[in-house]
Image (cartoon, rainbow, N blue to C red):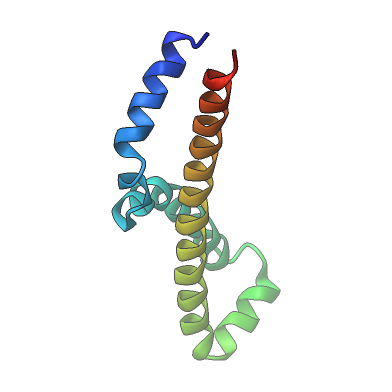
Length: 104
């Protein structure tokens, strides 16, 4: 026998399953966390708390471009995999409930 929450989740997931795979959902799910992580990294780099790293960073003008590209790649990675992970967790839960429902 399914609980009310499980029945509600089945209805919700059947309606929103394909929408949750869209690019916009990926952005809304992972972008805030990715932005916070990249902001923390950039604050750490530009705060000059480690003088040796600051000297190395300032010796070459290409280092800024490298940090910028790395930041974009970090954001893309976190956005994609956090949203995909959430979708997989919900899909697994949905399949478990359906299997439980089919049992006598």
